[in-house]
Length: 502
Image (cartoon, rainbow, N blue to C red; front, side, top):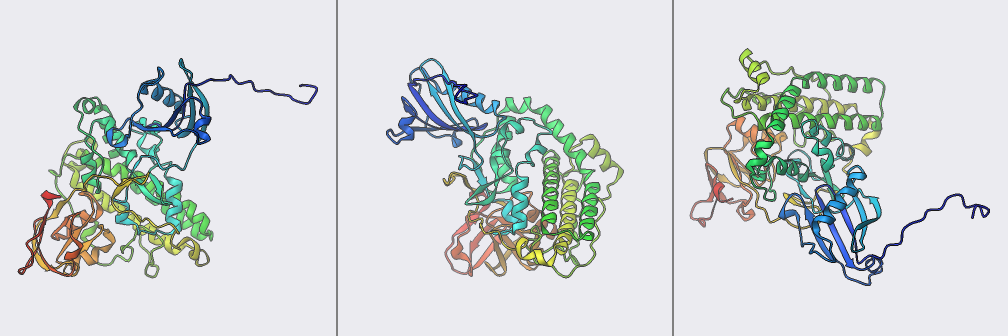
């Protein structure tokens, strides 16, 4: 063979399997197909495979089961496939495997980046701030930042790196929030998923409270609180750094691609700040120390605040200088409470969140005007793939059976025409503050307790609620809203929708 010019030869052991299959493997789950005998029976279509989905998250993510066969158990197969994943640095892969009656063999591993997992996605939150068809600029940044953002969460729980879940995932080529990234942490921490669903909006599969895991996670929670609260005090410095970078790029005559790459880095920073603020809110222990006014208290002359303001491609008024606003001034006692981790800080962290968002919108305003006219036709054009799904669902296309949560945002008693006097919104876009201010009341079909829109409506003291089950046939008819309850009036049918029934 040497004389024939063959320099290297690979010799492989021949396996005679009694069971073999294909597995799509990620840290959170394994999606299996298997047949009796050799894998070529499956590849050639000579046999119909058995199928199962095994997940560490729980029953909602699982389907079917792997019954012991020829000495191979589900536990042995799971451990083997997770071991393969670990060798390949937790990069999800397509694994071909075989069982010869005594041991498992790895036949082939191929990394995969595009697969319809049994993964829970949601349009909640993202639908509040971005149009169904965001610009190419936003989608470019979202897709490139999706893999980097989870590393931020690894600062307080390194298991995030094993999960290797993206921040957003694609369905129908459009981006949605990947709930599994967050629900995997809740499952390990022993926190019920209902807590997450109420705060961000939408619905999630059931994850129960697990007191033992909760107690074991206390050191993680303390680390999260310390890291997150500490990061809040650095936000102003980093905002000014990105502001200087954008100013320099504009002065240099940067083209659309350069600005898109800057925006990708900025997008990671934006989400990092929001995650740290959300963590501070979650551990704030209520608002006993007060609720100072937020940026929504003064929106009279704010050309940077408008519907779909989170997309820099959204048309803006003519350029005007909008300097970044300074971090809120806190009394000495509040600064001490913040640094020492005292409870009761929710009101002040809401103030920080809206200060942060207002400054982000100022930078988005500048980015819009920094984009060269010649490049706007491409970067400001709608991305061709539309986010067509509302609420929460599975990436493999299955509908969820979970019911979204309704709640009252602000109490009050109001009567008027639904869709005119009383606004009916799919989601609560904070950029529609002028519309909310002029309405008698606002009802949303989807939203979270801590969303920007909910915060705005509380600041406006506007009677409002999230009611997922509002009948669209009521639009154009007179209704009465009373503290989270909506019903038809004036001799019409006495149907009603209440928060406690949603």
